[in-house]
Amino acid sequence: MSASISDTIHLMGRQARAAAYRLAQLDSEHKNTILHAMAAALRDASPALLAANALDMAAASASVKPLSAAMLDRLRLDEARIESMAAGIEQVATLADPVGQVIDAWQRPNGLNIQQVRVPIGTIGIIYESRPNVTADAAVLCFKTGNATILRGGSEAIHSNRAIAEVLQAGGAAAGLPEHAIQLIPFTDRESVAVLAQMDRWLDLIIPRGGKGLIETVVSLARMPVIKHYDGICHLFVDAAADAAMAVALTVDSKTQKCGVCNALETLLVHRDIAASFLPRVATALQAKHVELRGCAATRAVLADIAAATEDDWRSEYLDLILSIKVVDSLEAAVAHINEYGSHHTDCIVTADEAAAGRFLREVDSACVFHNVSTRFADGGEFGFGAEIGISTDKLHARGPMGLRELTSYQYRVRGNGQTKGVVEL
Image (cartoon, rainbow, N blue to C red; front, side, top):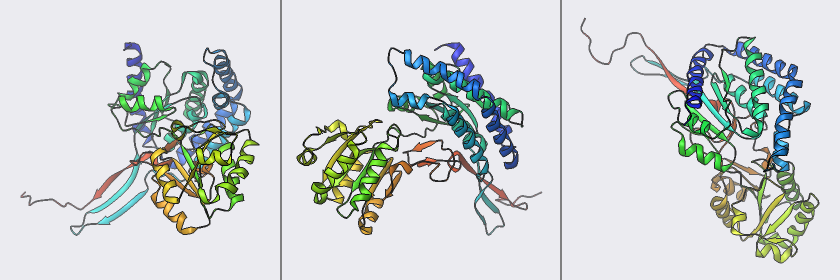
């Protein structure tokens, strides 16, 4: 392991810990003032951010392993996306600060007054790929909740990420942001991931955002808690009692509104009783959007011109205009398929049968379970959380879209008037 990489990242860890203690002293009003300063700084720095992003886009295009169109789109910045980042920061400033919130309070018979109060986690490492806007989202949400952040972005976005992190720290500092509250690791090699993941002395939590390989690497190395999701293998089940027009609209939106994201639809399940009438209708709508369809034998008996789905298709997160389709015999079969092949991210039932919807919502073991709603709504912004830190498919300590509340822990604050456990003779 390179001594320079290790020493640099451990120094960043010490600096983050010191910054976290100073962040805990800021009140909500001061934090919101800093957030508005960050947003203004991003807007002012737009030409520099676009120039940095142009370097990343040029490098990605010239790479021996060119990025896909979807990944290039994730990497690209323009004026509208910079404005969106700035507006997102301002939105976070409008959100209620969970730090200091009293979760519960009670008094014991001996007179002790006990409060359970939300507090910052402390120092959080974020490892992510491709999307420069994650730099702003992660740093801002962590800051609002009083957490210092160490960011490690992907090599494909290194220039963009550096520029954004520097602008946020400098812009916030002018309004009182503590030094080193937002730091970005300057190294792009894999060794830096290992150092960060093993730095439990300085880091309280690590959140990886990216492909399955990255997340598995972080989980295998981490000495501190990890919040993650491996895949977004999202399902939509069209029940026998579904409104066909609604089911078509929700399928098309879930798959094509933006296909390269974790809450996009990857597998469509259709009840056998309506397969003959529904499949041609939904296939026409999807193929008009240039979606490649792959189906089980029962699906292909109706849609003879589509490719056969394999076992691997049921476990695939395409992040592309590809959709696998399976005909199932019942609600029970749909639930069993989702729990077996899904990634516990987001799954939806389309039905007018409230009893069937209730069973689906109870029995599907996913972070988000929807009834008659596009899977694209599995998002912190759509849930009203503001810019999200990610979507967790874990069950502890956060699940689903992670906003401000999920970036806090709690402590017990106990007040008394001299109570002792035993008898004290003075």
